[in-house]
Amino acid sequence: AVQTGKRLDLVSARGEVETAVGQDAGLSPGGSAVLGTMVASASYIAAPATVRTGLPEALRILRDTCPREGWSAHPGFDGLVSFWMERHLMFRRLLTMMTDETAALLDRNADPRAYGARLSRLGGTFVNELHAHHQIEDMHYFPQLARRVPEIARGFALLEGDHVALDRHLGGFVAAANAVLRTDPAGAGVHEAAGRLATTLAASTRLLDRHLTDEEDLVVPVILRFGAEGLA
Image (tube, rainbow, N blue to C red):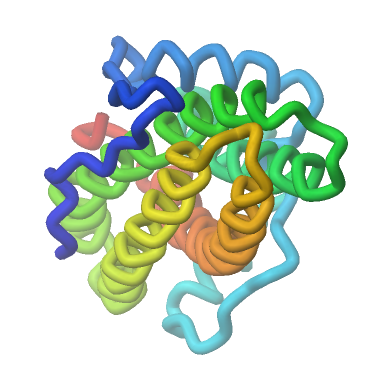
């Protein structure tokens, strides 16, 4: 399992460090605010386009008995499953927001100082919340779910491997974001640094989107079929 106890913090434009502080639901104050603006206009359920092949055959059978389009109507959806999907929605939306705002900066349609403040807040929330999410999955949820359905345990091992790869991508994202934040917003170098960040964001989005889709396809059918008792 990936060691996710470390903190990857973003330094703000003033050289301060922003960290996420957990609340009752596991969201930081910034994460809670961001999620609140997202959920009204986005679906928890729609499957992203990037899907991995080669997952355990037992998973295909489980998915067929509990298809994605029926999840939200299932009596077991509210609670842990809906919370899990909300977390995934938050991660996807944060990446989309940072990607769109970086593109606006590169097109000279955004103020560099305002962009830096937003990048520090959104990026700090993204990194800290994703690390916390992976940590509780590796240490708590995945082992318990694998014991419930041993025939798809290989799928959970694959997800843990994804966490290792994502940890490297997050390190690259933090380095690229900090390079933008440490650059004089009034100078030409900020756009060059933002271009490198845009490349990093695109790679991270592809990997994370595939990982979250696979994770949903493993976790949600198991919880809906066997219940969330003992997991939360």
